[in-house]
Length: 229
Image 1: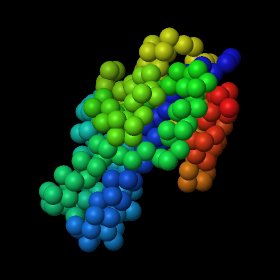
Image 2: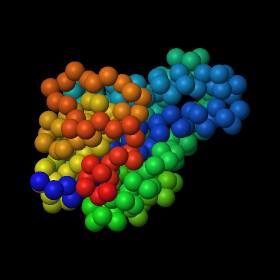
Image 3: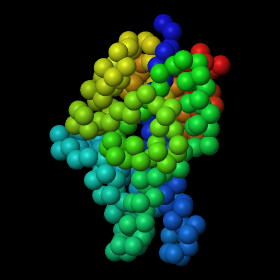
Image 4: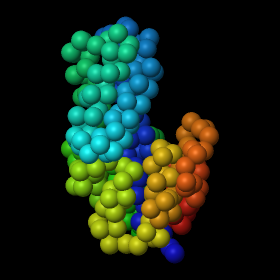
């Protein structure tokens, strides 16, 4: 079937999850962070995802801001930076306005110019997602910004992917779902979406029951996959 709806994961797909730690390091207020920001960013992201999976499995849901700050506290402790309240506050502020990857605006414009519906489907809270989209200047290019908070469980629950069909009144076959997270794109493929994995780091394919339909290096390839180029 024809693709008429293109849905993006947010963190790591549209927005650079390393940007907050990198920006804080470049500000130079904490020399130890300047030396170690890559580890902080990696630990922060790893724990953030792990905590969502554990909460989804156990039914102990907390919103993504709580998960994000809990993961940050772990990451700072792991690099002997825990207890620096000013650093923690700065990283939290930067995370609310994460930088988008450079190709994001042009990709969304190409999709909209071709008449496709576009949206975000993310673990993030509505406030987090709206802030990041506004900071990146892409709010007007999105028809819907969908958060798991409306169903109270994290990806990869199929209840989350159901949000797309309800919001856009479309069939699964009409949707191209784009994510940089291999586990997310695999689950979306299992759900029934056509999928594209944005493999920026050149990682191996995850060993899961489902595989993405396409693998691309960045978002520049999305319009062609959606029939918009």
